[in-house]
Length: 188
Image (cartoon, rainbow, N blue to C red):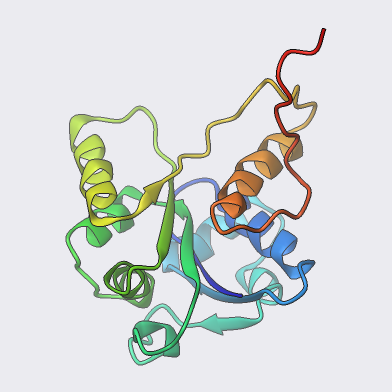
């Protein structure tokens, strides 16, 4: 399986990092990473990692300005793409097919090829324009999966919350690395 991970400039870079970390441990899963300039900046603001340390986790790294990269073409087979986090700027560009960088171009290709595109928008509160953009990408075939914490699993740490959100996104690709505490119904 080959998945593209895009990291845009919204807060929440930890979701993209955790996706890469978890997928690294899954046999037969190849990751292609593309980070926006702002995502690279947010890495140092929100974590103790630099962009090159994050890139070292991925199998293949693409420059956001390389519109000739393999993942810019529908003829390059992938199983889909996750944008985590997804900024409103990138969401808007994806919704309007404004592919002026590789992250948006790869998302656009994912949609046009009928492959699974999962966007993890990280913004709050949302105004009507944000909601319209999410509606537009959903109509185009994208799955909008904001990282909203679940509490039935009784998270004890921030890692528990992040792992659950990332694990649920991986569920959408049929990948179960065992990080999601599954709902079993009410136990009596």
